[in-house]
Amino acid sequence: MTTSVSGAVLREIGETLSIEQVHLSPITRHEVRVSVRACGICRSDLTVSSTDHGFPLPLMLGHEIAGVVEEVGSDVTHLQVGDHVVACPVNHCGTCDRCKTGQPILCPNGSATRRQPGEPPRATVGEAPLEQFIGIGGFAEQVVMHQNLVVRIPKEIPFDIACLLGCGVSTGLGAVLNAAAVRHGDTVLVVGCGGVGLNAVQGARIAGARRIIALDRSPDALLLAEQLGATDLVDAGDDDPVARVKELTGGLGVTHSFEMVGLPQTFELAMNALCKGGSAYLVGVQKPDAILGVPFRHFFEQKSVHGVAMGSTIPQIHIPEYAELYLQGRLQLDPLVADRITLDRVNEGLQRLRTGGVARSVIVFE
Image 1: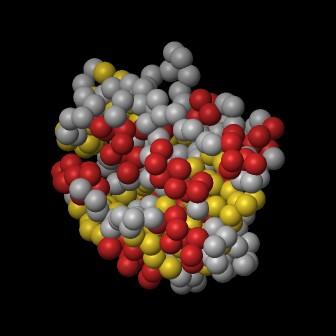
Image 2: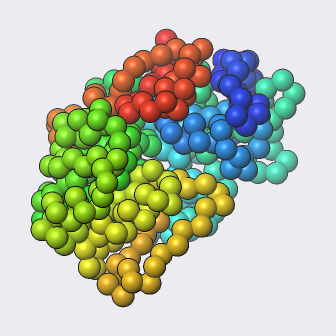
């Protein structure tokens, strides 16, 4: 039976989202239907709403969700009705060599989580198929998703906190702990201390980094970074922030830099701040046509550059680990939620990001 719910729909790039009736088709054997209790508004939602990244329209944004399983397909074995879950947008088949060796983010068959040609769309608005952003589309009261995107979490974690685990936490912590494998005694620079960058700061603290340098233009972001574990703060508006980073590291530079902003100039800063043999990790999403130039001198100094998607997360393994860190008090998530809003205020939440908000706005549902 088709289910009708309220959802926030993007019909034109650069326009505001409209609250409309969305129709969810019956689930298939590999799918689950989830009642959304909270959905974080991520910078990726803002980026895709304002810049054409090739997603079909109409589009339902939102991907950082927590909720309760309402229905499971016949072939779903790791979830039950009533489970508390989060979604994680690592689309993977679960059966290829990459998936079996713990690299689902590199799965070449990510489209396996989509419905196949000839099957009805999971969601429609009016008579039109409704694209669900990264397979989730969480700005709605309920969603239908492939089971591979859904992870069970402890019921002790509030939904408005749990939703952060699926994207902001997984991307930030994962970049440090999984992609870079930061070790005790390393030195770390985080360029851009928004929701993802702040979790990278926490990841560096958890990993035992000796020095954790937070760099941002926002005093509020830097203060929050300090609260979450940064040992040093650098104002990106300083005349020479790289020189300041070098000064803090005895003239050497850092062993690991994490670029969270997604701009060519911040990438250049992240490279220049490295020590010899250091590694830069590109986490921030660049514009689709961005071209990043790397002077050869960096490679002569044996520096390296790594792209990072979703923190190289293995959802079913890492998200429960992060949930446990939160319950132990070792991972601070409460300070990352700035305000809680209803679905009809989703455009206010996007605007808050546009004007420089640091912590998340989270949509909460009754």
